[in-house]
Image 1 (cartoon, rainbow over the protein chains, first blue to last red):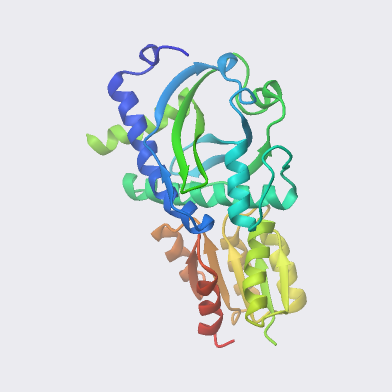
Image 2: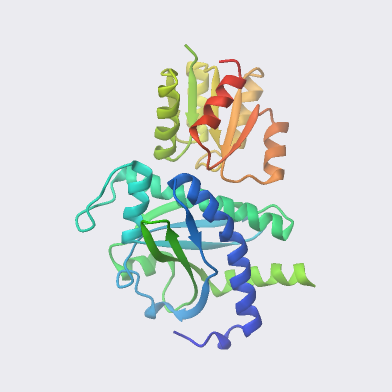
Length: 201
Length: 119
């Protein structure tokens, strides 16, 4: 992990956490309706790291979705979910039990998890829109599975880049107590900070 | 029997809405995976009601709504989107949408919208 102070002041790290907290806080309600369970999403821990130190397979991430802002803000976010959380989500959404060791994400399962993340991020962009007092529009989300860390990084992060990793606590009532992350570039983080600065000035 | 067209790029959402409609007796249901397909399907089957997602590939739901309304002014289209921002709702209503359902929703909300359309 890189000392965030190399890129951001502690105040900016707090602001990033706050803007992500405001936007993703509302997505807990969306997830709760879709899963039929209480969902808690905590204020994120914001880290800065080199892509070479990020290993999604080691950290048990198996699925993600990428969305681009197409209006109001420019940039892209990648949201990643861990294997056991994907299993719990599918159990709730598809109304079935899945074996922790052997379950696989089929086409309908991928569509279900993608739609959950779409609705979470849609709700998040609505919250951000209200907070920033401007229209914030996102692209069609693209879901993907992760089987190889290097292939993921090459496709979604780029080589030799520094990334901002926002880790959120993610609790699904009695089924899971885990975390998910949203990754963004330094440029994207600075876009959020610039918008936040305009709000508080 | 009312003909209902579901336009959503997420197969899971089409399945969820289709199941809710089917349980309520609405079984003449058609599907489109993007805005272009929705326009083509509309011209082909002339449905009584369309549920239209907004964020879709190829042609988004608002564009598809405008295209359908320009060709079929009496078309009944209900927008369904996770993007519940006021500006989008206003844009959709100005473009002729009959209702705007914010995702996530419960099946009852879909059935109420169908009933509200007199179907």
